[in-house]
Image (tube, rainbow, N blue to C red):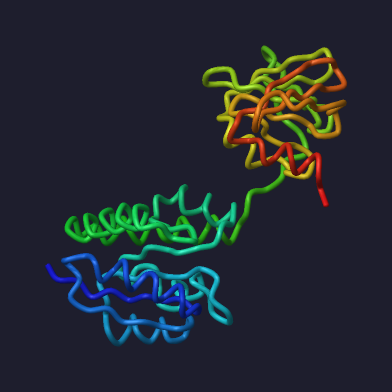
Length: 254
């Protein structure tokens, strides 16, 4: 099967870079381009591409507007292209829709392209439409910030205000809330807890630790890219290497 690919991006250099990567794929027979959302909608309707590399942040009519205008059930296979945006990326991951982060690397492009072409062979139109609708739903309704946790305690349910929580720790399939001298177990994934918390108040410093920034007493540089965080409770927690940027943002907010 020879493929027709549409590259939709308002940045000429971005289109040029993507064209170079697409042209290196032997299964591609034709490449067309669109410079904005309206051109993209017209090209999808008129040219019927097999695959679209769709920039999310186009002016006037963005990538999500394109999907809404064409209709998720009528969209060809799509690889979304986006600058780093936590809500957008989370939505793509929830829905299993392929995406590329700018600047796009050749290796990451090949992986996404291989997945997209594999889906084309499977011809799972209904599944793809549902995945895209799930993604749009997640984008339209960003994560709601919770104000309190509901914790089961025997036959009772306790309500723990978010502001009362000093830190949160992963505990296998649970998370443990530390609120003063009290500890509470919740059967919720750490990633779901992190997404529901206000990032200005809670920061993840390690894959096993989220802390309330208002409870941080002091921070030590522990090793290159790593820190030791002391809370008002006296607890000292290490940061993970991949979370060093978050600590540095706390230390240098301006």
